[in-house]
Length: 495
Image (tube, rainbow, N blue to C red; front, top):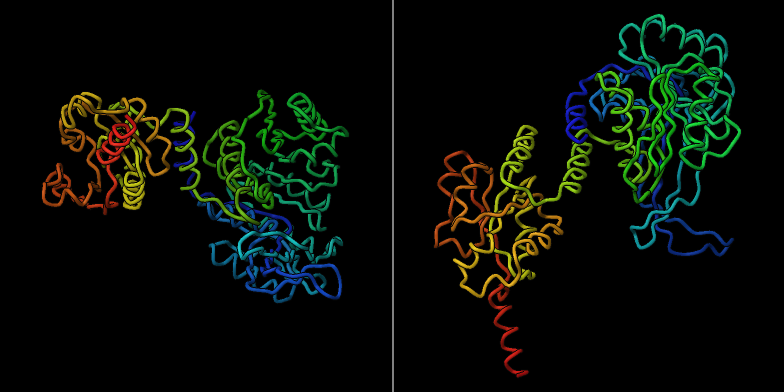
């Protein structure tokens, strides 16, 4: 599964995605909330910073750009300062904003959040202030949007409708857009409004309601996989929608197509903020489906990106590299960090193709102490992927004597695998790691500074292939030998 996901995410390409919907500006006003007002029992916010982000359909555009796609924006904004800020943000990410129609009849939709910071770091939303009009745009403006849609559709590889129920995506406009997309043989994806009636989306390719939205539509609570399956089937059949992706937060998503009915699980997350998760899912599905992914793979990728997004504060984007890192972390978590050499070389070959820097170090790592931890932190700072070559028990005995190691190689490997600074571990029997170094071909070789006068094994090979050798500082007075001798001394005194 992981190989398929890695292949899919590294072949997504740069599709042109036409995104139609409610373009918004998210405003975050940060401040220290250190006291209560004497005028009323409310926090006093001393403003320290203001941040602007793309919201609504603009958030989808930002997500698309982060995934390598070219967003083509189509919507309505006001003739105000917020519209300038929003269009500047969209221009910066490379979005095509020619389809954003300005009107003096309504403001640019904005959501202004007041964020209190406790002790300058713990973020808490105190209040949200919305500026918007949910009135349907006049017929002339709708015709202008539809004309722009017809013009842009030919250039697009896929279409997204992001409906936040702000008036633009009315029934007439939605139905016309879906019909035009079908005639052009273009997939059209919908993130629906929470109003409940999805009839205006009839004929869409994909719809992505969340648990709450779908529950309103089908008239019952979606509490488990069985009810999710039932709800997805009802939505698909009742509204003639080809594919339903019903997002179920920590449980993943339920996928319903003509020939597939399955729960697509996800990894449980520490949810920080669900804002923008639906936007991220929609964007990921759009890019994945234009990249020839099947629906199951596309939903798995959207689970990953949605999961990463909710661990961030506010509306946030997710990059291709973050997805790759997540897949690789999950794969290492299931396979473990300890790898035989042949498997390790296959893994490292993939990392090299991603232009990641391979860092190599080696040692016995028998009785772990602070010096080891600091040394490996330093090692991790030298590149992307750290490979630890650990001496086997027989190798340690040859180096340290018959009483060593104190801990066997399996125990040592388990302890070292728990350290975040290590990505892979392999065990070797030889007196030196030169054979491993020649097979792995690291970009960086790290040894302790005490090897400066001894001659670092592998230096000549690494440097001859364009790599470098880095000597790590040591923590004075910290060594496995010293720790063992201290334990022996205490035992002797006790005896």
